[in-house]
Length: 275
Image 1 (spheres, rainbow, N blue to C red):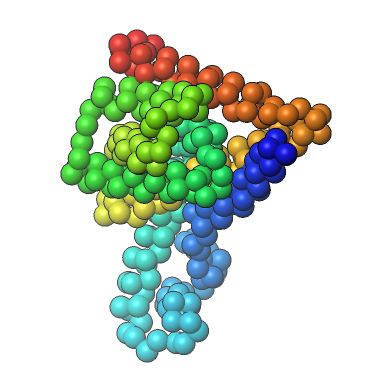
Image 2: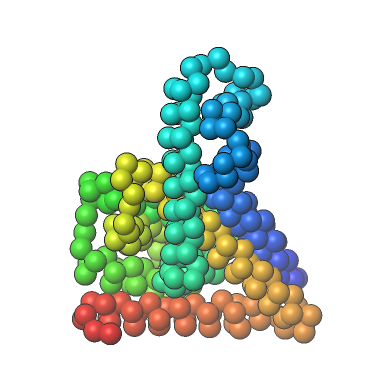
């Protein structure tokens, strides 16, 4: 009976996590305005002032504003630059995770394996997301800065810690959400290091930062979704083969051990400055 409950729990986590990840990914990408389909640069089909009015109607829920057309056009062009840059950096952030951010991917997978149920997964991901968003913003604006020689080894060791903790009845398990939050602060500094190397357009720093962070969250959601689907498929296969306790022995522990060894290797490599 215990084995059956564990398998049903794993399937429940996988299904809910996949739905949650889909929601994260969609929210990270869905902010276009209807006027974008008609008024993009270079068409020469619609008068710019009319485009500005269309944009204002969209924001006003369909009511035509009676503002000065020239002022309205200037506002529309500024907002269009903001939104276009925002969308551009969403894709930059997404690409930094998929396929570029292997260390971040492994950390999120380790968190998924650490979750006992869907509620604990939500708490872990929320703590991690909030923490790295805070330090990304602080570091990108110059408030908090640490050199990569410190941040990068720490990121690798956080991966090893979370993964190896999955292998044992760790006394720190009850503090896991707090620990993940602290680790998220470190990962945010890593994101900021990459963000700082980008050639940011003048006057569009904050749209770049917001877009990049949204892209990171969308990529993170995709990683959770893919992991949930693979885990659910593996659990279904093991249940079909009538293998009790197989998920822990054949999936969670081997995957956690492998991720932990990779994180430990990366940490030592980065700490020693080799590779």
